[in-house]
Image (tube, rainbow, N blue to C red):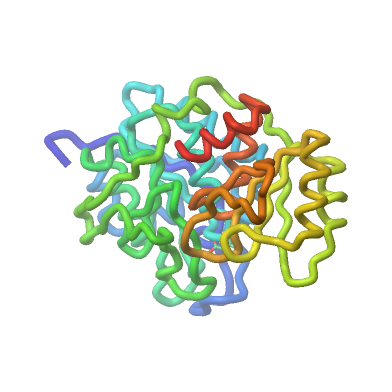
Amino acid sequence: YGDKMKNIIIVATGGTIAGSGKVGKATNYQAGKINIKEIIDSIPMINEVANLKAIQLFNVDSNEMNEEHWIILANKINDLASQKNVDGIVVTHGTDTLDETAYFLNLTINTYKPVVLTGAMRPASATSADGPINLYQAVCLASCDDALGHGVMAVFSSTIYSGRDIQKISNFKTDAFDQKDFGCLGYMNDDKVMMFSRTFKKHTLQSVFSEKPITELPPVGIVYYYAGAKPDILTMMAQNHRGIVIIGSGSGNYSQAWLNEIETLAAKGIIFVRASRVNQGIVYESDVFDPHNVCIPSNTLSGQKARVLLMLALSVTQNTKEIKRIFNEY
Ligand code: ASP
């Protein structure tokens, strides 16, 4: 880690890494119960890696996270990252919605300094809890010069992921994440960082959304298409949302009845993004499912990440063409 130990701040938000339940058991516990100081104290050698300071910002199950938490968290990290004596930031977070927070931060954090999310699948009270090793490695990554300029990342099960592409793929195993078709950014070998790839998509310092603090986000909802789904769910969603992300079948597809309703609502000013319920691949423009070009294809973003980007995009423009460009760049 060079001659001098780095100063790393751990911002704790809860999750299973701070979970507590029956001693030895891996399931049926409550997330967001244990203070970050207690977790740090349980990790051998962590204080040899960096000078650590911990902030307990929230202590919640990540299903309680919402746009307000994201804004508070982003502002806190931006404030910390602007301090000269802070070298990197680690965020502990529940795994359920970690992918959404990671992408939001990737787009709104204004620093080249490493920001690394981590969490755990097993509560602190379980046999072989995975939180301590994940947090240890997240601190190692945040302290490493090789981590500079990669945007917001996450470390899980000795693997380094980008905030843009990370997704939860198991609700059971400790190796619970992957990065869609894109492999991973790198691996951790104990405390050593091994980076292998870099994202081409804009983040942090290049992101227009990190230029000034976000104060509020416009309402954007998600609707899921299934065989036989009636279009009135779109009509209802449009009543109190500016934008709607459709999780379509295949490459962002749906029935003719949905297409008709989408076109009617788009004419009234609702902005639509087409994403897919299929985990891999890409959603591109479609002459069949969007013949009049009223929707924005989600590209490779999952529905929930497309929602994050649409909320941010709508906070700077209402122009569909412009939002399409944003979806290609971020
Ligand atoms: N329900 C938990 C949470 O997201 C799951 C976890 O952290 O693994 O907070």
